[in-house]
Length: 163
Ligand SMILES: NC(=O)C1=CN([C@@H]2O[C@H](COP(=O)(O)OP(=O)(O)OC[C@H]3O[C@@H](n4cnc5c(N)ncnc54)[C@H](O)[C@@H]3O)[C@@H](O)[C@H]2O)C=CC1
Ligand SMILES: O=C([O-])C1=[NH+]CCC1
Image (cartoon, rainbow, N blue to C red):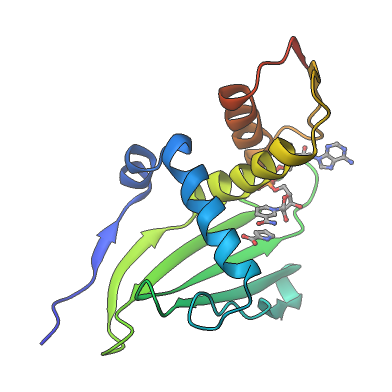
């Protein structure tokens, strides 16, 4: 009989996730996804449920990696907030399941995962597309994604200036 799921809170995800480990793992996962081999990665397009009354959406984002034995789904709610609102624009949770039995093994805070994963894949694309010798990093906005993009881009590249 499987025990109850482990809960991994935001401060624990923050301690565990490091760009220097996340980036190579994402590069491997993206490579597997590109092979279009269903034993490597099955990742259907995100399903969204409109939350019209609240100007938002629930997004459901499942993935199965049969060869790696990984079954998980992110649940993310995102909203169009009024200017000056202090409410979060995005809130996410990631569930890790046992693919053989179907029980939930871990419930993880998804906010830090969302911030870091999104910025990390931007950095991976920049590794391939950025002109050599680029000196200025420009970021539009100053929210969560702006901060995580600032963090990863300044960690792995050398810019003279950030705007
Ligand atoms: N593809 C993905 O995996 C993800 C995409 N997102 C998207 O990234 C965007 C940013 O998300 P967060 O950083 O979490 O939101 P956030 O609410 O923390 O930050 C948004 C920032 O944009 C600024 N902003 C809004 N309108 C602007 C304008 N016209 N000009 C300049 N700045 C403006 C706001 O002042 C705020 O600083 C959203 O569109 C969100 O849906 C977020 C998470 C994951
Ligand atoms: O994919 C994602 O995590 C999100 N998309 C828009 C807000 C969050």
